Length: 234
Image (spheres, rainbow, N blue to C red):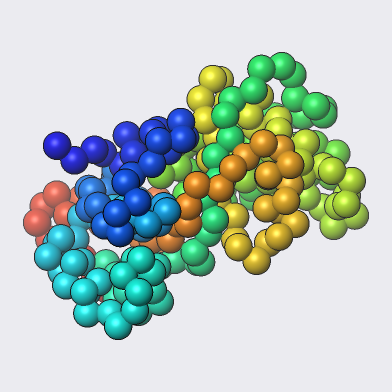
């Protein structure tokens, strides 16, 4: 029986990965919001409710190394066209184990639901919590398959002081005993160094596909799918 995406992610957080056999595992979307591709070492996971036959045919049609097929630009573009979704970039996917103790800096939780950082985070995550620090912001929320995801923001005049590292360390201490996940652009070397210095480790790459617009648009699309209606391509 095929594992769910959440089961695959939970195993990866423990250091147990899909077999490095060059294969591609297809799993259902964990919900209407998120679809995408995760590439581990020599094995990929495509999570979409699109037809599996179409996905495998699209991968087989690429003239490239099979190990690179799921992250090939032509396949990602075809998947976007097929699903009517958008993506920003291919991210490095990292995870950090929970930590005991108190965060290494003063944090004030932001309770205003209209705060710009809260509004932005809720497009990609559920159960969002935001904390402000002197010179930075820490966000935790439920993202892909309900995993706990962290995002941080550091003001320009507060950089080069280790604040990013302390913020992402704090996320591990606020995690309530579960792993914390992060998606970082490969070109953002400064952020990658901060996460790794805080004990996070890269486990793969991820291309996340979201429906255009906000949660209201996504709810409409979910209702259309349950009613057997076609989805508008954009």
